[in-house]
Image (cartoon, rainbow, N blue to C red; front, side):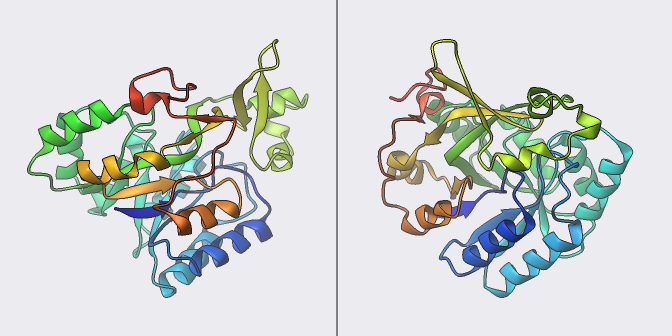
Length: 281
């Protein structure tokens, strides 16, 4: 089982993003995803910047996949999506069924991202017939589900990747909760989410961490940590263990795998064990 670095989910300054991927290029991680997956109003990097980073990573020996937006809301976003799909060199991670359709039409290989509702073997087989090479298991599903679906896919023609460490993307909305929290409208948000490099923590009235606001995306307050499940995943036939970046330290963790991550007071692994997602089993 290999390690992958998922796309950066946060709005970071351009210099920090470049530093992250320059560091990733020097790491042992074989597979790197990059691209804006949350909000098209985040314009720190343009598509040409991501292509430059992709070429730099490829020159360093990495497999590179361009990740697409999870929620397409405007024609301009669809136009940008077409540019990604038609880049002519790199596969894409399709985080929306529209991206899957475009990849199918263009005959472009794609990865089915975790936000696509690929909940059964029939769906995955259909996507595979359209050019899917790998799928990332939806985060709310379990080891038991994965075991069954891999049995149903046998003999398996596609790879499987599991989101193994990081803050979980739970939902996306047409509204920007970060902007609203700051008293701004979405149309004039000033890209305020750049002020929170790991999202904005939301707590209950009892001061218990509950969620994270990340622009139009809602994340888990706790980070999913399945590092201690790597042996079981490998036995199941999982091909990639994904680290979702939250800082440069994410690269250090990816480099250290298959070691276990350090214990933390805000970990969770409930979904993997068919429990409420925010629990730690």
